Amino acid sequence: MTVYFIGAGPGDPELITVKGQRLIRSCPVILYAGSLVPENLLEGHRAKQCVDTAELDLDAIVVLLRDAHANGQDVARVHSGDPSLYGAIGEQIRRLDALGIPFEIVPGVTATAASAAALGRELTLPGISQTVILTRYATKTSMPPGEALADLARHRATLAIHLGVRHIERIVADLLLHYGADCPVAVVFRASWPDEARVEGTLADIAPKVRAAGMERTAMIIVGRVLSAVSFADSTLYGKD
Image (cartoon, rainbow, N blue to C red; front, side, top):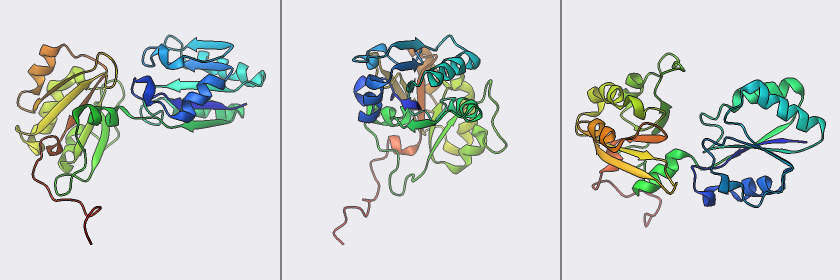
């Protein structure tokens, strides 16, 4: 048997990969993060056991994986977005390795990609930004040395900030010195879900706009000049030469 860590994508059921959908519909055991993965994404499954793990701790999840392995059953372990980003699969993989249980990671569409699509923007423009930094705002989980938001801001790259909308004022304070008050910012709530919402502004005014919109969780913060750039060089990709 194999445990498949499947990236369900940002929320829209049509944004899961063909491989991920096939595995969900064929695996006899499904474990999914119900707080972030919409149930209609599981439509068409024929699993004998389908468990919402939102209320389970790591030990309880590992017991389910171990039992499936003992029964010779493949498991679709469904995570939101791409499981390699803030998916907490590392700790699960460590347990699986110790138990000798094989696994495979099936990538998914990231919240960053879905947010850029919602905004209708390219995050890498010639002469504006050729780097995208995916990070989070440190609260319960501390950041390693050199990865504090104020340190990353020195690069002036496009920033995609996870898990930080509740601390939008602190984020603005960390970025102002290097990005400037007029730097464009967009906050996308539940990108690709039916209730998707977004707020756009600058570092000078984004915090009150976010508070007025009532965004407190499940939102991606995108920061960078690419969000408003209209004057930039064409890439060489489609050049005549």
